[in-house]
Length: 487
Ligand code: NAD
Image (cartoon, rainbow, N blue to C red; front, top):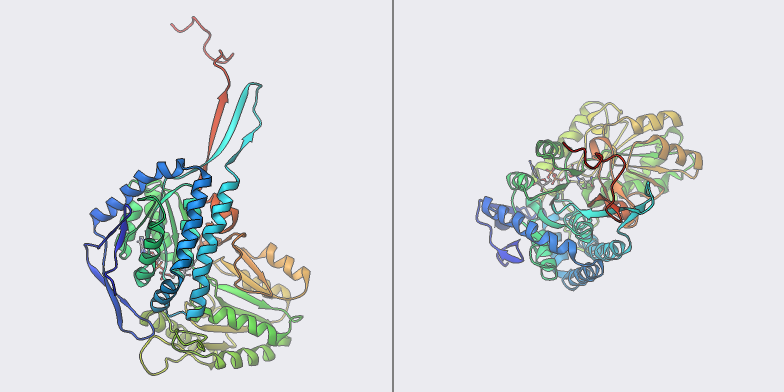
């Protein structure tokens, strides 16, 4: 394997600080050892972005759009390589990763078009002879800090609209998925002007150093609520704006009018996709008591039948978890639920052999007060509890500090309306969980953060409004100090 290289000012540069290991989650073997960026390299990356920002912002939208479409094409050209490396680093099944590589290209194309279409508005003026221009202007330099679970998509959710809006970036990937991000950086850097996109590598210290760089004007972060809160504190001291996309504890409600077997299929998909390591995984399920037994039976059958294994094997449906620590934490959460009275109906154990695999677990008879229903579970666990009436279902679903997404399974428009009016979340999925639409916003509320990505909202997030008040000619205004009375 080639020595992984940072991207700074349009050039490949080996990191000069402490090396860290990237472990293959499917084998537990070290995949690569990557040196971190040192303080000087972080400073150079930020300075390169600052130097590139004004030229990039001044590039006509048509030309920026053309370059973003070239980025999309360059990613497609290297799709096989990207798919292979992201599969090795995440352990997610290869076919899904191939899909995500294509989504990266589509995102660049989407924002290439959107950013061409609009540049602000003209507000009505107070007086004749004036223009009130409301321009959308880029922030300048955006720090993009991303987690390991969706290194391609979450990178593109920020980088494509930030570039489209005219910003330059410094990206800091999660250590676990550094190789994927450096390869993506190399591909895009081959298309973009030098310094428009810089990628540095390292852990929390490198991330925090990027946030603190004076050149950084906006911090866009996706990751845990704990780290998001730390970044918000640092950024607030420096009066820098932040976009935070944080942890979730998404509920699903299965109403009595929904076919329980079919709903179980949707819920099992939403709970075990990417071994449950999705911020919007379904992590707690409330099922109408009338449907409960049928739903639980179906969910257990489906979960037990999932093919867990090598992410490169085409038959595999669920790969390993990303880390030994993550698996241990989830197993502790399952043990805690069982100790508190839940029943583990299938899964929950680590199969023998290497890799961080965990059998998909279904827990029944959980109680809403248990930790497994309140704290994020970043792994393949599906806790289910019955409810007796609609009010109770909505109350339980809403009783959380998190507010990323919620799924409901029903054909009743009244229930759909209650869901979107009463649940304090960024996305409500009705009968079709975990579907993103590039044209519609994605994000959270409360402890899940407040940023919006995708859609027009995801583009607007990377620009701010500037008002230009323009009196067409210089003339004395009645409220100015009268001429000749200055002394
Ligand atoms: P994490 O919060 O541990 O790390 C995220 C990134 O922040 C990494 O790049 C990490 O190196 C960096 N970092 C850590 N400390 C930092 C600091 N003090 N300053 C600057 N950077 C720092 O998250 P993770 O374990 O990589 O990812 C899993 C979490 O991400 C889950 O909680 C999941 O719900 C969340 N997530 C949220 C979304 C969303 O869109 N809301 C999407 C995916 C994942």
